[in-house]
Amino acid sequence: MNVETTKNNNITIVTPVVRRLDASVSQKFKESVQEIIRGGETELLIDFSRVDFIDSSSLGALVSLLKMLNGKGTLALSGMNANLQNLFKLTRMDRIFMTFPTQDEALTKLNNR
Image (cartoon, rainbow, N blue to C red):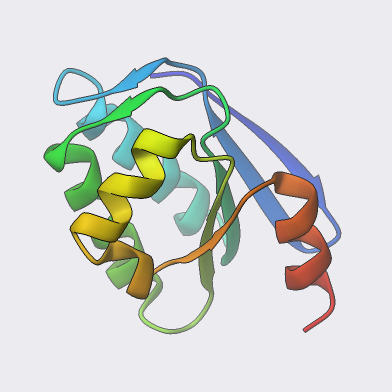
């Protein structure tokens, strides 16, 4: 699965380049981000601005990535549409992940901590 990566100071921004982050791509998404973490990047922002749908396999992938960081980094999320925000609230994942309405707001907060 294709993800775009950019850097902003010490934060690596990962943008999935798919509309649907479902079982057909969640494993590849997880592997792509795991490779970034193994490369030494520990401050991550996943920008979901291009994603319209996430299923349970992708939620599991996000939890797995957070566990991989093992408290030695950040995995924040931004750019989620209303449906994704509702999913995160219903599953209480909004209590596990730092979420931000936009990438700019996330970067401002993350760069100033």
